[in-house]
Length: 323
Image (cartoon, rainbow, N blue to C red):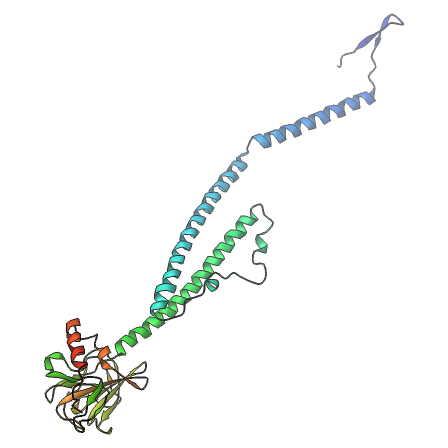
């Protein structure tokens, strides 16, 4: 039972009972409810602002872990970019220079992506700028790797061709030093043994006994093994590819036939004195793109520096040739 309250009425000099109106009761209830709601809101706000829930703590830990992973990703990307930059530098300034290939322009290596916005789906988030910049960096790195990969594929093909070229170039002396009597005549103006007039001698004459072995000076295919060219007698021509051809003249006999493939150092024939020749010797010539060139520059594969120096000295003498 609720308590009855009274108030003192000075006019009647007596106590009167306080009558509670229903309107006031409703008002008090509403005020109480409003105050309670306000208090609850303030409590929730303060608690949410200054105190973390278990779920918020878990999300915060996850966010911290993602930040660490992102920092690690950035570090790894920086390392990858540094390594790729080093490979690109060597590619342009060593590999492509060695194989006589044009360097890849910097604008081609660093070119971006044109057209539509590739990162539209990543926009509108709190960290959109960070996500977009990282995605752009990854895409750029991926494209640079693709460009470099294609470049290395090209270098591999060039290396294969270079290896074939090095094997094909006439690079050894056609007669070994142990079998040589002397180097009779070199490339240049020489006295003709028959007319005694000075004329151009287009090869080198190696004096050796009849039957001395003659070796192919580079890989290639025998295109001629006959005596059909005036003055050369029995002779052999080897097409080495890449514009190079070697000629071996005045042979005693052949050890190869036309269209036969040969390797550098293979025995192809024997020294003789057939054709326009004064004595047993090998007349040796080299052609590049159809033009005769001095064979003296092509013995780096078989002679020491001292042997080459002596050969160069004898080849430079303007003596009489043997053919």
